[in-house]
Length: 543
Ligand code: ABU
Image (cartoon, rainbow, N blue to C red; front, side):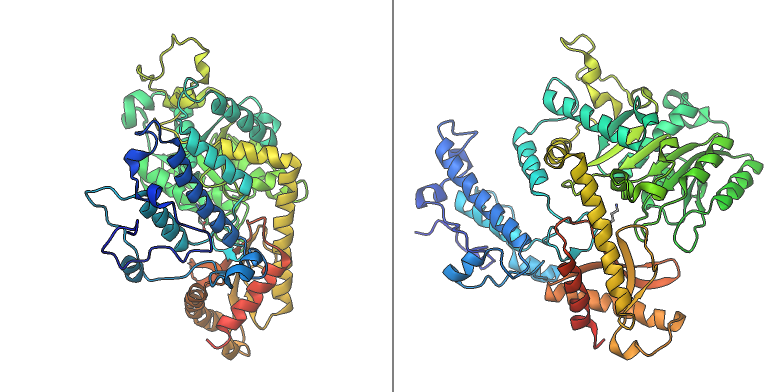
């Protein structure tokens, strides 16, 4: 009798890769009650089950790095070529995916073989974001050491709020945060930092600390303790989370003033000062400026020194959102002028899960002033943060944040940093930037097919239109841009159907849809950029 559950015509994942997915009949028929933790003598069957899952993960890993030309070649001899080789995804529309998958939850337990099949089918239909032809998001790639760290983290399964239950991880967090602050600059050496669930929440922590620094009464007394309208400033190219701070913290988005940017997407400092003075004249209280170091679409760096001068003059908090561009701090070659002046900031957001390639998610927020986080956010929950514990309770970092439970995002970063050393990160940043320069060069060699929005990007964001044959002789201008803007999503759709390339696109203000290519995967090579150039042309020349 089959160990598979009956009555389903859904995809069972058995054709995922060439790994043997069969548990022995006896183990396959078992359920969760036969393995740990319910069956304390169930180690052997637990191990058999988990090893099968690990086999699937390794198969997925192999596919992730397979350009269709070698990884897993031994499989070709034994089984014939895997049709998924060289593919990032096999696209299905939501209703097709729904029809293919059995996702329903039932009253009765499923057996272990079914769970292995569930894992196979999940991996089979996932997008391989670590594939070198996935250029779609800011976070691309799959660092194997960081992944090993995430496996360990999942197994250790602890919460980061107290030293009591996360002693090693809390100490690692201290070491890594101190190292990151040292890299930001010596003015941050005696500051404070914390990991947060994403860059948006990191920016929120900066906002909360800035308000607390200027209006410490807000914590107890709330909005009425501030006599006047608080106003924050950010460029019109900033990440939307900055506006979200204004919405969730009681300012309202009307009081998050968008400062115009120049034609490269950088905040114009004279415009910032004009808008600050305008708001002051109205009687408002300008208190917070966000400078972006690496905007999401164009990869622009706001001019921090000039913005810092204005903040000093008008006594405003300077936050640098380097969620995206922070990794460049490692690079002596590219750090200046992009991040020059960052040490003058009061707070800095920096996401290792973006340019540094740490596994999702890993986001950090750093403060120049120590003590602010705890003073701003501490609620002294008696059941968690007792002051009479047997160890030094300053290591119970959980009371510095507005969350209670905090995921362990540090081990995968610490292990990755150990593996590369600081110099390895510097090499990685330089390589990503050089590859992006290579891509720009290749596009400039094909000006009939590719039109760059920024001929000299500051970051690994390369923004461009692909030009199909019929529009190549047309002079570039608003009319052609409008037509290219319509073609862009169609070409993206073809990429996804083919499964051989993924590049993001978006409109930007009045500019119609264009592609934004990101090289943040350290596994990308020049030949992958050549693949992108050729594949876009193969899929799009007739549009
Ligand atoms: N938080 C910004 C991520 C956007 C992107 O990956 O494209």
